Length: 250
Image (cartoon, rainbow, N blue to C red; front, side, top):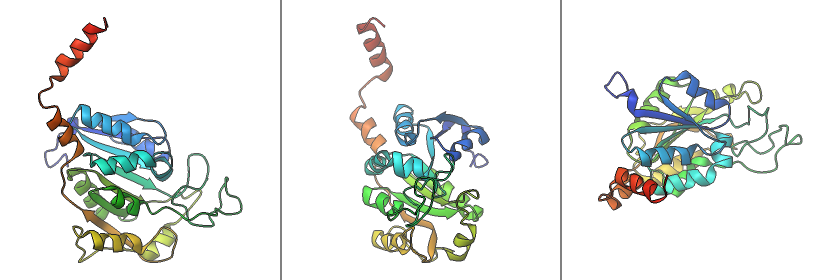
């Protein structure tokens, strides 16, 4: 994207707590480390304060779908123009192997030595129901497709989320499982919500069905940040800050 003329000065990435957060050390752009589960509100704040920035959040499945699920739902509901990339390895790898909201039924970990007794969340179904306007899925064994998906998600105007099925080789090595089941979507209309739901529900993160990869859903809709700017178009931000500081003797 930099090669196409996008200024990296106008890109900022936000991470949470977990193995995924090392991404901040590998990409030489503006970045912000947030708290566990708080990637989304930090990204939202940056976008509202500096609407000209491209804001990309990186989070793990425990980080986003566990501690941070309420923030994720409301960001999708608002359709704020940020991109969330979820490093979904279906295990808390940093804290040595506990189950996450996308771990399948019966998964054994430090917190569930006899196997978890609950079904996993289907995060993409939650997101489409919450109002997300761009949803996609890829795997870490499909880098070219991931690059395409990431590019479209970042350029999409509105809330976009990419669920990346990747692997923690130490605690949950699922490479063979995914390689046998994934397939790339063809002849799929991502603008059709019902078709998108069918594909999203084809694999529920627990069954052994086929796993569709690619752009599952895409919709154009006015964004939250556009609405905020429109409502406050006559507000002089800098003058307002100065007035507040002066009024409070700061």
